[in-house]
Image 1 (cartoon, rainbow, N blue to C red):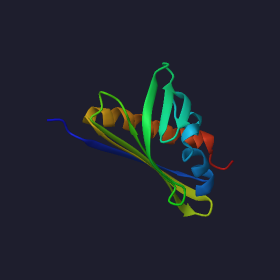
Image 2 (cartoon, one colour):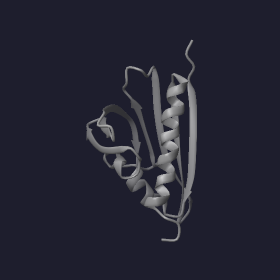
Image 3 (cartoon, one colour):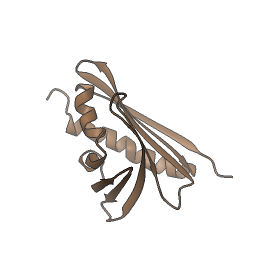
Image 4 (cartoon, rainbow, N blue to C red):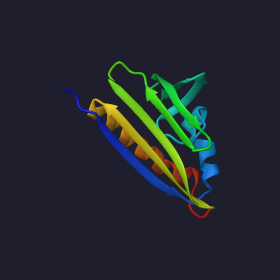
Length: 133
């Protein structure tokens, strides 16, 4: 029996939540902040991302809520029984926010792989939005 796993990462960024959301909440801009993704296209409720190896992956956009600053999607892969990725930007102060990235997947090993990449993506946001700049 396969198991489902959940991996969650979060990072604080010294920028207004709306400014960070303008980037991470734009499905067609993922390549600007997620390492290893070189291109993306959005068609209706589907996003196609291309990784550095040239592989194109199809995703379904489940939720894009500007008011709640919440983006949720699922990977559509044959090796994946279940996947849901959720990115949220929460305001901590006028000039500071927290970005949360949750990955749920089955098989569990897939959650570990995707969750690790999501953690690296959040770390990469500190390059896009450097402290004190």
